[in-house]
Image (tube, rainbow, N blue to C red; front, top):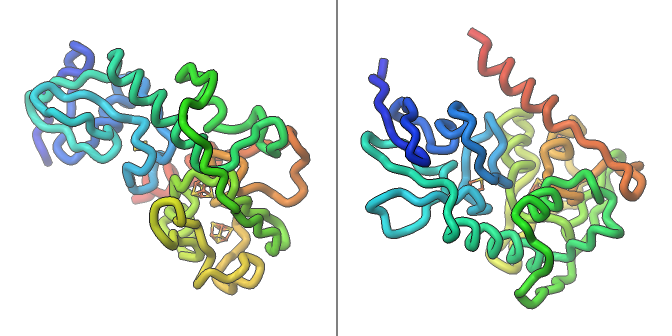
Length: 236
Ligand code: SF4
Ligand code: SF4
Ligand code: FES
């Protein structure tokens, strides 16, 4: 059994165990952090960078979800610098694809939109890249709209780590990166997809939706997937 130690987060002493991430410790201590790619129970990837924190003595800002605790760490989660960077990051996410909330099926039920409100984003200061993105409506139950995808990879991880289907992956890099099914087949042609819908439930935006969702009426239930993961982890 690993001996626990104490770190400070926002000048508060918090108990930590070797191997835990700063995000896990913050959660235990009820210290809120903005997250978008993280989903409790899935492996952390540090994709969105919204959970950046400051660690005394470390010149760079580090993502809390992929940074492990260490003895004597002094961490800060709230500062003008962090607020500035988080605001910039959320604006950059919006500028990368075609997020037009007013006509999105996830309007008012979108983690990205909610995060933008929370971080005080009232406009985007960066040029919109307006990529030409596909909508894959080939699946009998679900739709993938790449225009709304923020490449958080929650869907990829839940599909491989929880459902075990390994249907989804990321192809390409940077501006050209896309979520694919199998070897870039239409989703509906996938033989590995079990149609479980877990990817749809954990997707934080309107990128993955049931194909009968009406504009602004979408309801997702990521809590159900979180509960499933929790029960599975608690199994002896
Ligand atoms: S529906 Fe299930 S099996 Fe199919 S891609 Fe989504 S998570 Fe994977
Ligand atoms: S489809 Fe959704 S869950 Fe998958 S990477 Fe894009 S935004 Fe994330
Ligand atoms: S939640 Fe940590 S980088 Fe996305």
